Length: 237
Image (cartoon, rainbow, N blue to C red; front, side, top):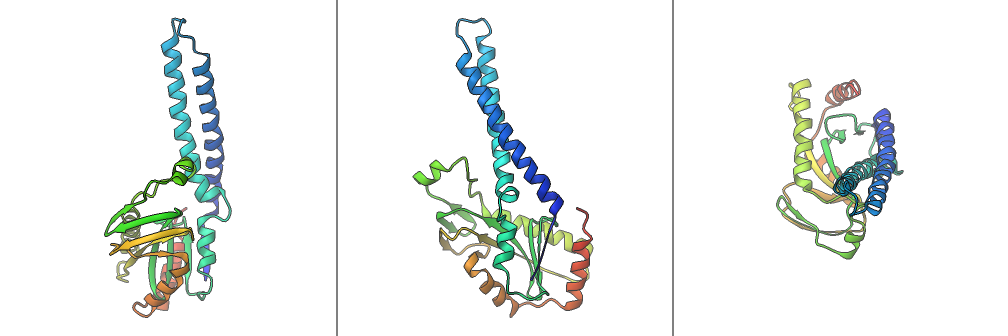
């Protein structure tokens, strides 16, 4: 299995993660200092309070932006590195493309073309059809600022596949390729309760098994794989 990623994009987003994280903390600190120093007896007291709240809001937004990018690009092993490790064992006809195409993670090989909607949540996660829920817990509360919300993996998976499908239909219309979405949980500590999910959902330990099973059902010719590689490698960064 081969793996490619956009190194320039990853480095750029890692720098954004550092600047936004530290900048956000700095702005939050300024907001706290202003709130402590504001004196109700001063005529500009309300402006000081507004400035303090403004700093807190901007600092929070910057910290969230920094955290988002840090989880994906600033910490090793990154999600794409963990994915590449989990997919070892497939031969060189299979390729993982990370942050190079309309969808963040695209896996192409004789068994088909897949997009991965990656999640790193741990603990209890339940699903019914296209609805998702993660119950409240003290652990989640304590890590609320260090971990992003679950969101709706089904919507994200379908969106990634749709963007990738449109890209292939535009550039390789004669191949009639079907992009298959997969929701992938990277955290081995996740406890999944699945009830007829609208999109296939797997943990990393089951990913290879699912893909190998799919290889018995769908095949992509070597000529098509070569056309895909030429297209993907030539995609503007």
